[in-house]
Image (tube, rainbow, N blue to C red):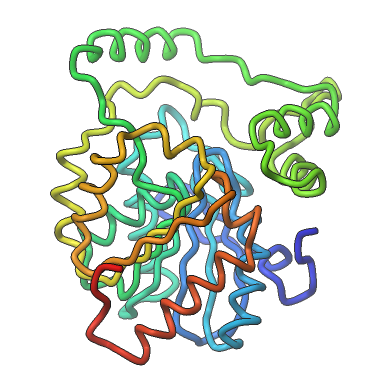
Length: 308
């Protein structure tokens, strides 16, 4: 059950305009506490962090200020015209921090794509990030350069004929789809996720809340060598938490994943057995326990952490 108490992340939504579009963001915790920014994954919404935030408050106390934005084209944020290019998420994060917590260093907690954004931002703006926490992330496969012509052709094709959003008869039908994708989640967790991720269509069916344009093929694939160069510029102590049963773990070879993690100078790596990709949704208390211990240790030892 998602935490919907009056002071929880799920029930406190605000908006801020960044350049030409409005971003929705959720808040919880202390109004003037140390900022902790939570960044969700592709097609997700910031509301799925609610239980993790509640668990962190229970374990660390009420002193942190939590801010969880919906990326452009996700959740309650505005859609933007054209394509969604990955660097724009970094630009949105940069503008959001300037608007909400200027002149402050922040803790970034990112899941999946949100972790990709957080990790690259921490390398591009190292002075802004005091602590970096990556949840089942940095596991995007390196783009095959031989497939570049096909990627560009497919991107051009989808610009001519954008993919139609897949619809479902009702919430139970969408829940059944999520149950097949995330079998490790409980039935209750699957049903709540379906409600958070869906919105009604004009004909009475439901579809994903996120902009269907996110499903377009990206003309430029992920460049691992470039990402590694940015990750090597990260100075913030970094905690990487992976789900031991996450299918994302099979996307990149173990040796390559070890090489990616090694880019972060001050790092700790934790694998939670039995957890899938949505680790913060599946087991928020367990994930919060590791995050809280890591953040508390940093407070006690400002010099950072060595590899564990």
